[in-house]
Length: 245
Image (cartoon, rainbow, N blue to C red; front, side, top):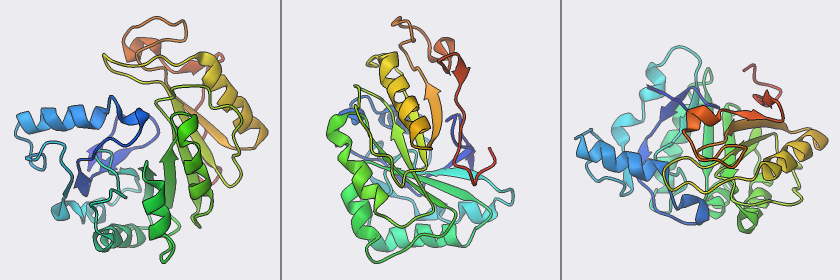
């Protein structure tokens, strides 16, 4: 288990590594940069850099963690990558089912494959399913997600690249908003984030503001840490109602 610095989770579990870019949000992928760095360091599991690879040796990791933990699954890949056999994904979900003490957060940009997978399968109660929505072109992912039978459905609106306009958040339980970080980060307008926060409030959806990223609320570029997480005068750390954060 690797403790995570990602604000909305506790640890990461990567039974797969590597991915490829599919939409605008992938342009400055942090996982790609990290994978290349890990390869250069000779870290086991990253011999192929950011090429998609399955890691069967990591499957049983959650079984050995006794403390109830919130896991982000495949922070370095996408569980529903087109090269991931459904049979291998089945094994991952079986581990989740057999460790009900943990919570598992799954985030994908491959909503069609996720939807296909769940036409013949169900997830255990400790599984959260999410999709990334970075601009208006990717809002359709929400419709795929809302029609999958799972306990918690969530959105990662990061990197938020434009105003998303009106959102239908029916059957969505949680929304995470964040700006992009890194040397090539694209700025996020505060009004884009505020628009989402207000709609979450109106539609009774938990709202979590993850970060400003490289560009601050004042439109100035500085370190992510210096920009902080304050939106409208407070830190937003809301979670779905059935989770005690």
